[in-house]
Length: 138
Image 1: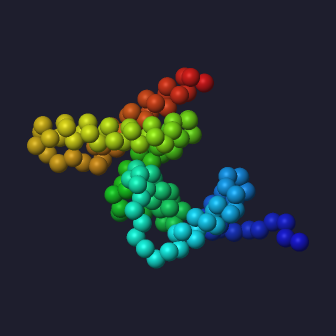
Image 2 (image 1 turned 90 degrees about the horizontal axis):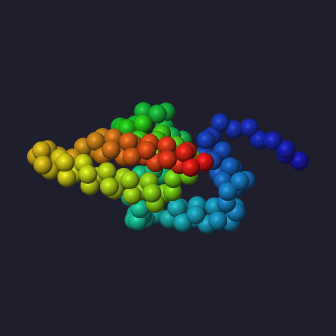
Image 3 (image 1 turned 45 degrees about the vertical axis):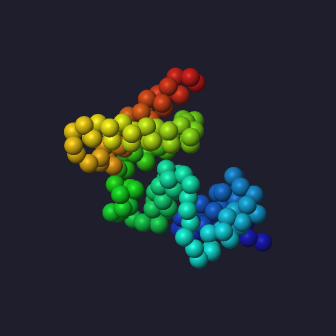
């Protein structure tokens, strides 16, 4: 009888933790079957899709990432902190959307293109404020 198992594969650990603590195995298997299809997927929450892409990058790369999704490491750390503090996915998504609108309006007055880094800076500041507020409520 096998009582322990040793691995360095981060995806094995992720799936193990999900099955042990979070999801019924049947739901995880159903999701895996859906992902095995050879097709392009249209994901309806762009923010959540980018966050998922970042999480995959953390597990599958050595940390060197040229993709624009992970150029601002501070942003993703603050997003993690926000979730851990109890900020909902919807609230985080709203912050990112309002930050994009704010930066776009400001940049349009200056006649310069909107930078993703600037959007994330606005979002990080707002998320830090939300985290502080959640911590005060506890």
